[in-house]
Length: 177
DNA sequence: CCCTGATTCGC
DNA sequence: GCGAATCAGG
Image (cartoon, rainbow, N blue to C red):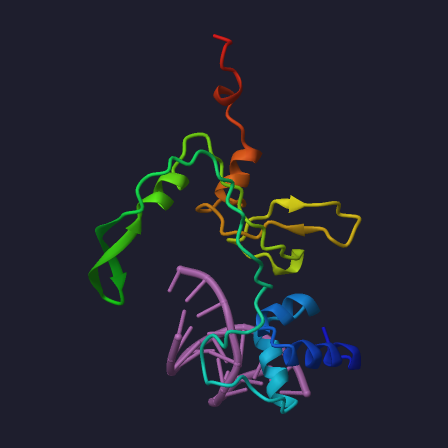
């Protein structure tokens, strides 16, 4: 692929908008993120603020809370419990006490509640090996996108859409047999 | 491990 | 000029 004026312009635009090199490479197509970075330097475009690392660039737009599907809510007492958990921090494990809101726990554990993931609304070019590739919307319209959530293991889908893609027979027949 | 940008250097 | 390989960092 070569750097036509058009492609260079697009590169400049996207770079100034704060997209990462890999995202730009995906949009341009036919080039690697290294190619993009190399070009950026050759063009003497301003680099990213701090050296190295994730310049918290313009990630996918962050949208409001999921509106977690509330099921049953037993009004328990508004108490908090302290639970000790182990967390990996660098090379060592760190134990820390965490205050847990009991009411929240009760609300979120309910039986039949299925948590529908919040789609990250990724475009085809933004998908990676571990973003959920469940399509959403009509491919013919421009609101078409993919779930984009973190995939479950090596599955092409997140846990939720994985279940939709593969519905075990046992789930559907209750009475039969 | 995932990701980011920066640099180097053979082509 | 180009970009893969490599480096450095979160």
